[in-house]
Image 1 (spheres, rainbow, N blue to C red):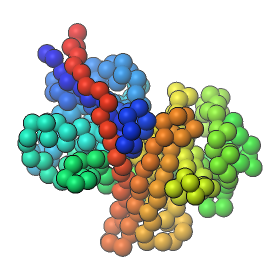
Image 2: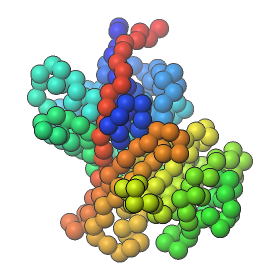
Image 3: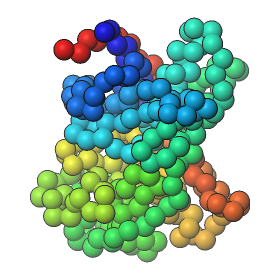
Length: 298
């Protein structure tokens, strides 16, 4: 059986920047083992597999794989998948709701399409879980993990800690933009503290930005494979909720730049809103399609 895939760059409006995701459109009948092999073959931070929904009122069931494991939820794969599905529908002149509903291990994930003059340019998702804060880690251990000095770690707002809105990350605030630029993942440092409470990756950020950056926060994310992720929607959403709660504010909107230091600049928009009974966190951005193809499984 010939199966289709599309590769999209997420959190950007320029091809070959942002965070790439491979979206397999014809995943029905594939085993988990086949999905894992294919995700490793693509080699992107995540690959998604689109399946028929278990509940016909939802849009699709979506499974998300890194090159080494399946994960319950992630930001840029959902946004990329929604954009790809919207593009496929447009090509086939079929209607599509403004909000897609994806069934995932973490729960039901609503993804709203973003349009400009009637054309879909990106998407925005609502995270499936409220913020949870887990174990804290000493500045010394996190500094070793990122090849930094303990003085580069800022702790006034929060200690380095595991935070999650669906996928856990070890989150650390850095004192300066220069410290963020100097980050280099250290294998021994990673193994000394991770995995921890479900987190296997480190998300480092700083609030020190320049006016020309046109953002409120700069970030980098490093994986246990010692690779860097160009844009991490789930971690961005968790940090947005964390900062809002620590600042004791009910509404917070952030423009977040990531991937700049690795040459794949990304721009994410996040929003925290606690004015309703249940706080909500959304993250979104633009997306572009860069390639399409087919493959045959052996």
